Image 1 (cartoon, rainbow, N blue to C red):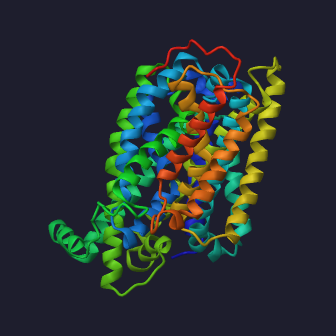
Image 2 (tube, rainbow, N blue to C red; image 1 turned 180 degrees about the vertical axis):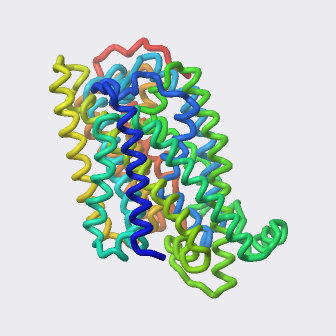
Image 3 (cartoon, one colour; image 1 turned 45 degrees about the vertical axis):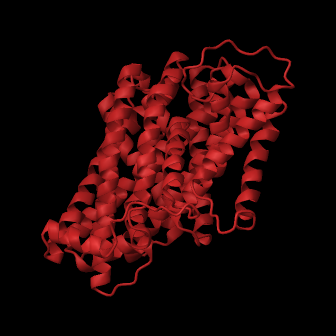
Length: 490
């Protein structure tokens, strides 16, 4: 294969994203950057959210993980599915009721400035870490197949990718992201289907024969029924539901697209359609992982889980399929980062700088917005270099580990605001949202000593949220503030 072919495809793809950014960012203001002028079509948001939710982690790591854990990940997906309905019918009505540009403003309206700023800070921390882990994973693969053959080093490839993302997100914001994510989701799903079909044909089995072989090798098992294990069904299901509530419903990146839809009814329609679609798409990724694992067993291959998909596609399938794989991988890369950097810019400008509290002229808003956007791009770059040094954990596990500690306080803050009418003293909130994750960390490190053989899984997020909630409830007993009379949406 010509060494310049894959880099050429990358730049053609980038040119297409730039063209979309040009047409969607005409007459863009700071308000349209953050909200899309409330004109985003719900069906485009629903389709584009697939790419944002899956990202390069699902594209590479989820199929690879099947070799060691079969379809246990699907227990988590079923939990995701349940969580999306909570987002659609509890959280979205709340955001539309208050006409929020930043969802963390709800915490200010309900619990005061301290809760608002700490909630936004936890989002900024968590999304920055999560997005850079995803970015690192995909750049690693692109480095191996695209950049290394033309002589680019990892740091050069990282700078190039980040500058590309910066170029098409700097002006358009949400209006651009909705359309680019739609395009990128299409290419990602195209690559997924092409790889599955080609592998099946390569192995010369009918679909029924292939499925029988996969079952025989125990590569399609969904249920894990040992309560002590981290992938036990109820840990995965309940943890998955709360991961969705926290990482989608309490996440500015995911919600900024939903609240850019004109009406609440359309936003809910988007969320429901998206949740059913995600069930099917994740099943396809796990099917691909089962086929890859069986192919590796047949051929005596011993790749690391994250290398299984790219290595087999490059080595054993036609070059045309590998090109489609690279296009899919590129498509998985951009939506996992472009939306994050846009959402972080929005959150920092609205929640930390205080665009909605300060009467800043539009020119000053645009100047500050660009400075913040570029600053996050620089931070992303530095963190990718850091992850290059630290690479001893599964990327999927690392992302959910980060989420468990950083989204837990967010979950507790929002739950306290929605489920009670009490106030917590603002001076207590910083201590509570720091103490809860620290206690959870200490507990997880000593779980085996306290409960012999027990391993914490995704229930860590829920435990963190509950501990934050309980501490807020206790602190509210010392509050002199009058309980709010806002009606709970529950």
